[in-house]
Length: 96
Image (cartoon, rainbow, N blue to C red; front, side):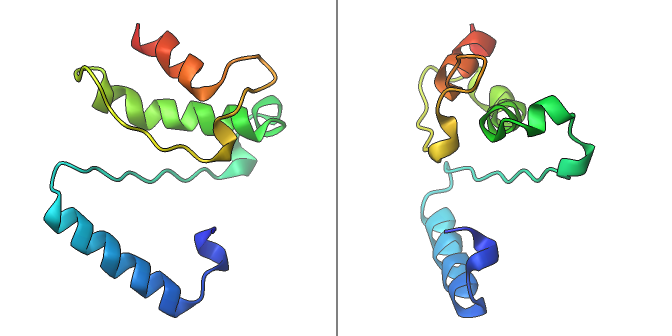
């Protein structure tokens, strides 16, 4: 569910649950990225998967390049983009 579609009580319930999870599991990291799409180049905006993959790379590379293994739970936009690479392909290219 997109947060923008949630009602206030759902947002509060989610925030509370996340806070409890993070207190119980301090090794878990949560990041959020936001793009002002009108500032994104047209060819990237045309493929939402490409933008998603690029933005994930911006956040993730610094966190994961030093660890031997990590778990990433992507949303459906991690599928292959017009360029032919999935998010996992894209990350492997940048982490090699």
